[in-house]
Length: 124
Image (tube, rainbow, N blue to C red; front, side, top):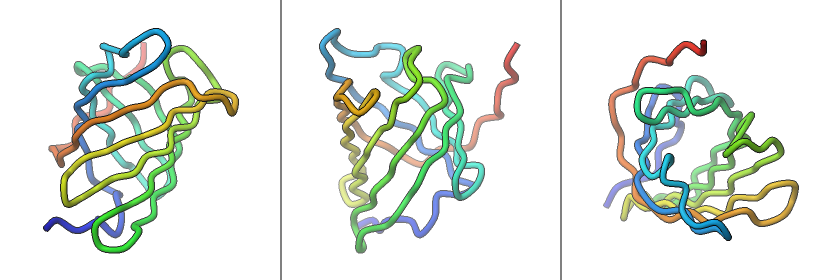
């Protein structure tokens, strides 16, 4: 059985999965990497490109599970998005509710694994 990490700082997690929304999946985000720079900031890359930067809160909930809340600066072209995730470190699975301006935007269901941290791409 895998245990929840005490902290995500210095780690990168690759997520692979499906989004469920009124407009279907977000195929540009079917696989991406979240790199945790500090206790409150991370960046997301997909296909070698910077997707967004975000603030986050992370809390282990016992040995197996953790809660993770992301607040991306922009998500799918939208501001005001908050992603509430449950990480299961035993199954290496992630489920999330994605909210936009306090309204449901999408659900996400996928798996994650620890990967080498990619360089942070430069914008522009």
